[in-house]
Length: 216
Image (tube, rainbow, N blue to C red; front, side):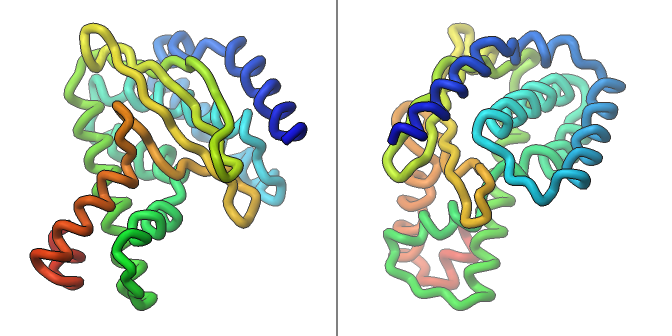
C-alpha cells in the first residue's frame, strides 16, 4: 500500500504539471508523424523495460488528444491512428475475459480469440464514431486514484463532446508482463465491461452461444 501511495503521489504531481489539452491543440500533422516515429524508435530500444503507470497514462492522454485533433479533418487518418496508436493501449484479452465472467461460458481457444477480436473491433468502431461527431474535443486530466485489485482509475474531463463537457474514468491495470493497459472505461457510473456483460447475457438467452458471438 505504501508503494502504491508513492506511485499515485508521483502520478498526480507529474500529470498536474502536464497540459494535455494544450499539447493536443498545438500539434499539427507533421508533429504527429514526428512523435509517432519517436515513439516507435523508443519502443524498439526500450522494449525490454516495462513502462510505469505515470508514463503510460501520460502517453495515453497525449495520444487521445492527438487523435481528436486528427479526427477533426481526417476520419481516415484517425482510423489508422486508432489501430496503430490507441488500440495498443487496451488489454482486449483481459476485457473479453472480464465480460465473459458473468456468462459461465467455457469457450474454446478459437471462440475466445474470435470474441476478443469482436470486442476490439466494436470498441475501435465506437471510438472513431464518437470522436467524429464533434468538431472540437479534448481530454483533460482531473485526478487519479487506486481501486480494488491494484488498478488505477484516471478521471478525465472530455471538453467539447457536450456544451458542458463530461467526465469519464479510464481504468489501468498491470498485466502479467508488468505493462499498464486500459482494462475498462466508466461513463456515468456504467462501465464498458458492464455494458458488454449485459449484452452478452441478453444475446445468449435469445440466440445461444454461436448466435451471441455472431450478433455482438
